[in-house]
Image (cartoon, rainbow, N blue to C red):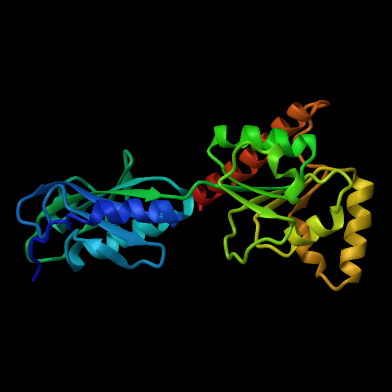
Length: 279
């Protein structure tokens, strides 16, 4: 038997804390109820990436399964959802089936004795995409200036004497040793312009980044790839490398090349989101 449990006052603090840590999660909000339901309009819950509800209340088992399923999908494609949980008779009256989507609303069956209706807005809170710029070439500096405008969290990996070239960054590392990370949504651009190309690309290859761009000729990439494979790095790890980095827009200047690289990353990222939405 469910009870009405309003969201804890601290839930907004939890949301702010998770955002600050860059953790992906879902904020589920009850936006409408009809008849008797365990949760009332305004109730909220934080759903973590592992499917656990960290705080808040959106009802008992009658709503939980449908909301958790929608939360998992929202985290996968980055799109919000509205879930309407209704009793069987009401769904049948409108010619609806559980799991059906109509006019942007996902319908689910309320099997609880209360037989009420509850609409829940499921909103994914995804961290900013991370762009790691390795090197201090003019293209690297131009990338660092451009990336924040497109919402990227910027990390600079460059020698200590080159750090002053970058006015702003969310984080900085001297050299090319990346911190341990399991993130698979990072983007790395190696733009070392002949200075430690091999060390930088090796660090990028050994990371879990989703996409790696190398600013350099195909000949140079092939030579470095051959060297790194001789060191025992599996060939499949190089599949993420795009070189020369950037879309072919006829770019010549450092700013133009940086723009082509940002455009390529955005296209790659959005393609992945569109693919997730179709599956």
